[in-house]
Length: 100
Image 1: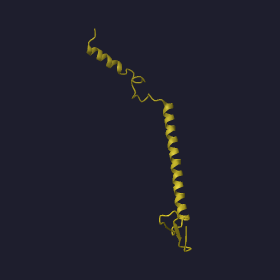
Image 2 (image 1 turned 90 degrees about the vertical axis):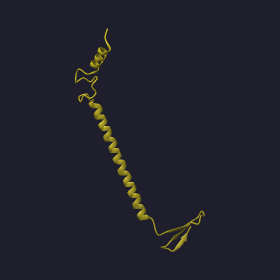
Image 3 (image 1 turned 30 degrees about the horizontal axis):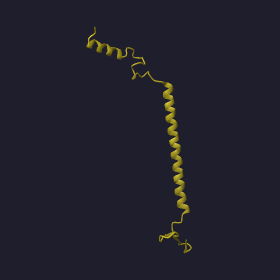
Image 4 (image 1 turned 180 degrees about the vertical axis):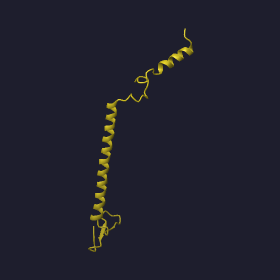
C-alpha cells in the first residue's frame, strides 16, 4: 500500500511535463503557438484599427464642415427678442427691420 507522501510525489511527477516541447501540460512553451489563430487575430486587430481611423477622419471632416458652415452662413448680428410668446421677434441690423 502506498503512503500519502508517495502518492503526492507521484502526482507531482505526473503533472510536470517530461518533454519540454510537448503541448500537453506546458502552456508557457514558446513553440506552442497556433500560427493561423495568431494571424487571424492580427488581421482582426488591423481591421478594427483601420475602421476606427476611418470613423475618426469622417467625424473630423463632419465637425470641420459644420464649423465652416456656421462661420460662413450665419448672421451673428441678428438679435432675437423673446417675450415668452410663440413668435419671437428677430432684429436684423443690416436692414434695420424686425421680423417674426
